[in-house]
Each structure stands twice: as C-alpha cells, then as structure tokens.
Image (cartoon, rainbow, N blue to C red):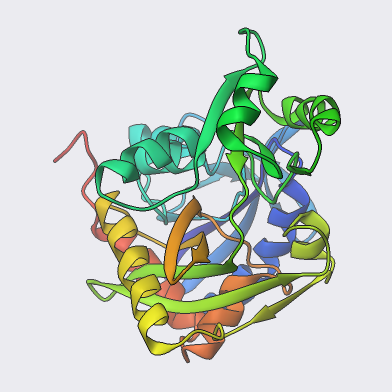
Length: 329
C-alpha cells in the first residue's frame, strides 16, 4: 500500500475551508490502495494527526516519528487553499526533497495564484478577459484616473487571495477607500476590475487519463451583489449544473476553458471562473486547488459527469507518481 499524506490547513484565512475539504478528500481515497494520514500545515506548526494525537513533521524529508520509528510518505495529496499550498511554495519544497504531490507544478501554482500575471499570460494566447488596473499599496495611484479607465460599478480584488476574501463591488467613487482597505488587508497588491454584465460560470477542468477533460460548467446565481464568501460557502447562491447555456455558448466555454488550461501547461484539478457577455466567455481567474467541502462546486460537477471521486484521486496520484522530478529529469 502507498503511504499518502492528505495535507490541509495553510497560513491564510482559507485554512478553515481547507480543513473541511480534507475530510471529503480523505474519505474518497481508496482504503484498499492507500495508507492515508491527515497532515496539518498551520502557522502553529506542521504535524501528522492520527487518532487525535499530533506527531511533528520533520521538514528535512516530510516524515514523522512514532515510538522511535520514522514514517515516510510516497505521495502528498495537497488540499491547502491559499498560501503556502496554492501559490507554489510547498510545491517547490516537495520538488526539492523529491516527494511526489498532486496538482500542478510550482510554477503554474504561483502563476495562477497571481491574478495579474495569470491574465497577462493568457492574454498572449487570445483568452478574453475583463479590463483591469493593478495597484500596489506602497506605490502612488490615482483613483480618478483608474475609474475613468475602468468605469463603475467595478470590483476591487486582492491580487493573491482566494474564496472571495477581500473582494468588494464598488458602485460609487465614495466606496473606493473602504474597498481598498479591505483588499489591502489580504494583499499589498490589488486589482481594480471592470464589471461585466453577463452570466457567471465556473468551469471544472482536469487532466484525466492523458486528456484534458471538462468536468462541468456551473452557472452561478448569487443572492448577494456578487459571488462572495457567503455565497460560496454559506448557501447564499444558486449553483446550477449544468449551466443554462445554448449549445453554441456551451461549446465556446468548453473551448476557451480547455485552451486556458492547456496554454498554462496545467496538470491536476482546476476550476476557472468566467463571465459570458454576448456569448463570449471572459476569464476571471483559475483555482488550482478548488474547494472540496460539501458546499463546493467541483464535487457537484464531478457528480454530474459521473466521475467517481475515488477514481479521480487515483488519477491524480498516478499523475503525481509518474511526473519526473525536475532535478532528476
């Protein structure tokens, strides 16, 4: 049997969502194939959790010791949302110590977690997106100049954050100060993005058995002003799978979502957000570690596609074990 670390937690406010995701993923792994252990990576420490006991992780080789016996892992199933598990840091660490891990490589993790850089790269491949302006907390910026370019309403977003933390929809110039303060609490870099009046969809894309597969397209109908944390995790939205799209629009969404995934040379599970305006999907962001809590979209899409989560994670682990370590290629 393979020894599998199911790694959850993280250093951001998303750690609570990650811990919920961990349970569904842990239960989905095949007990006949894997000896699975929950591993927590939190600000207060790294540890394996077994039957309520905590065993510190040795960061030299990501092992733990019980009664003098060292236990090592064959593969990591990473389910950390936010830093340091979704922005490339842990992926680079596991790469350096030669430990296989699920999901995309560290470069793709870092790139997709940085909304500004991800949009800039995808623009080169012809992926449509909303207009946006990037600002830094410690550099001068002119709100009037920005709003003249972007218009109102607009969105103010932390450049590197997930779960809609720190995002505001701004209707009046007078609301900008509070919106920026909220965003800067999450990140020193902020995107101010134009409002696109259209249908919001979330698209699950994976590499499955050697091919790019669209898992599902979910239409998002928020009960709030936009798809915020409450809408995502506390039931304040309708998530309709499959999305109510005509065949032509659905094919266009699938085409652009697959192109974005392949353009970034992605592997592993992803869920990307688009706004469809006049039949054309506009890219917002890509999540390389989407939620797996009971309220999350990707498990709904997998169910719609008759994709068994046990088979899905078998596929993810197989990709991880077969991926060549960059230093030994």
